[in-house]
Image (cartoon, rainbow over all chains, first blue to last red; front, top):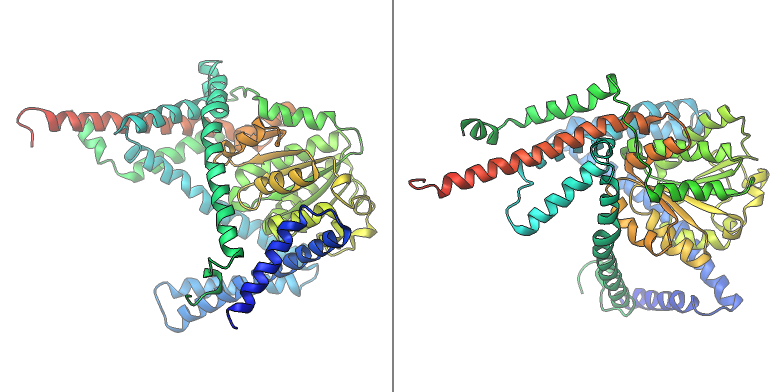
Length: 208
Length: 279
């Protein structure tokens, strides 16, 4: 019973939503819209689950004095302060305190973390981008052409560079990406049918 | 060659230092290299130019501060163009932090162009739910959006009252750094409701969008900082896109040199191994 009810709900709602796309009857469309609106409401709660999980993991780190537990202390401190600024202080998320924290703490720190990738890519380009096989050589040649063609220096060296890059993007890249998109979406359809028919039950947890 | 053997074990901190200098020096001494305009960016520009005054453009800021360096200049350039053409901007976001970044750009440029909140532009903020939310949104905006970014009822705003469904939106401009983002707008909003979509994405995502452009599902694309720089050139705005292109040019050249050097070292090592008496 415990496993049957969720399977029945998934099957009923899933196939209803699937067939509603093809049935232009007002009642069916309104029901479909209602289910979609319920989903949007539930999706908003995912944020709370994430926050609770984050607090739980970091509190445990502090309690057990695991490695780098001091950073958990700082993380939770800023988390609670930003929540306080967003919920309680004047203006809430549009207020001066929250906006200051967002613009001068969160945004620069987040951008900096992402920017570190540039250094790792540079190191990888020296150590790992090696033409060891014919395919790797072809990939490297295409990568070098695109990297030079996509910058003003490439245009200055040869005006035909951007056109060559556009051809690489429009022809071989598009062909390859189309194949990948088809593959991914066929896989998604297959997975969706498995979930709807109850063959795939991993979302219920706890094994079969 | 001994120098190649030494370079094979080069300390990575030297590589990091060279990249750091390649970024900083062009910012202090601008090169002012000319930026060529590519067809995907021109398509976005032409589409916005073709819109009549008063048309409503839905801008979706689907990125976070990690992608701010690439997408914020595009956000500013697009908003500038829309305000100059007297188009109305209805901003929202599929990512939580995107709305705050979009709000910053809107506020700054609205003051410059004398635009009024509520009649010329609104920001309704982050909306969770991804693809499913987009399906609900296109059919009836009120099912998803009741208040704006500051909590004001949407029906109390003139522009808020004008937008009821996808039919009221002339163009969707999504600035996207991942999932949910441009693919959802194309696959769900455009496919279901037919609204034209333009996109600005990070450079790493740009190649993935070409199939949608070739099939006509995407009108045009601003790819990475280069796309933003091209758009700034078209709208004649000296922003962070054009400023950043000098640094990006030097770093790209540096990366290509690293790749070539790495492969020269590989060839040298292979030659040593196959030389008689080696090993």
